[in-house]
Length: 198
Image (cartoon, rainbow, N blue to C red; front, side, top):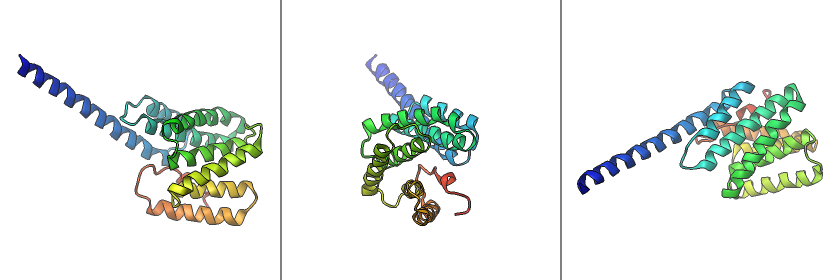
């Protein structure tokens, strides 16, 4: 009887581990789609997939959910800035949730910086000066742990654009474009944030 229970428990455990590996794989496959989609509906589907994924690292699913909503906000801000505020707010909530468990994660700090810049541009923040200080803090935190991250270069470029320094923005966009050609690791999103003529 003990032998049968042992075998049965081993079988159930192996099924759970297999299911977990499957959802981690689905998460990574879904994350790779962030660069190829370009409609509101696609971003909503990915957001739903990320938030419903049962993964061993829940913070990663929330990070990608925040990235999907940030990119949706970017897309909507070009069409109708007023409609982008809900996506930006949702992105910020999920990214802030990630920062609770991963406070020094450079990817999440970069994403929070991008979200904050987007919020400044859309007049969501009551105190833009304080928000600009937050962006600088996110840049510093990310720079100390991952200085060659192409998304960090995009954040710096967008920050330079905001302050009117087009030369620095151009330099950072070029650095990001180069960084994406040599980047092999996930997360690989962000290429679509580089203006087409860079």
